[in-house]
Image (tube, rainbow, N blue to C red; front, top):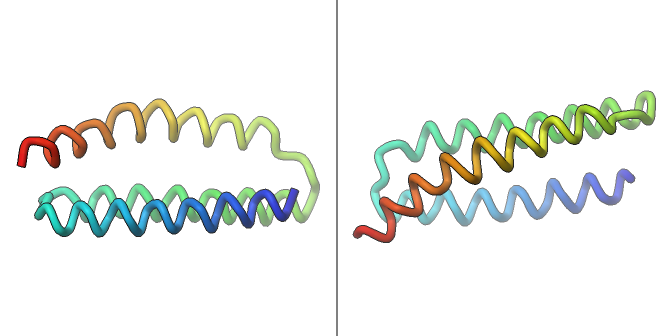
Amino acid sequence: MIEAFNKIIDHTIAHFTYEEELLEKQSIREKDIHAEAHEKFINNIFKLKDDFEQDGSLIDEVFTLLHDWLFVHILHEDRIFTAKITQK
């Protein structure tokens, strides 16, 4: 499970770095707020990993984090930026 957390963390950081560079290149005003959301998500993953290492049970927390991320961030917030970028 720790290896899975490490892969998720590595992939997430690489993706967020790419996305933030794209927002910077496109001069998207809200890029800093978006980057803060990314940082919060990464910090949550690190916390979940630490919690898992301590007691080994996280299923509810992982599902909640992924649900919030997928439905709030990706399907709402990222789509706003996608629309702004494709309009340029």
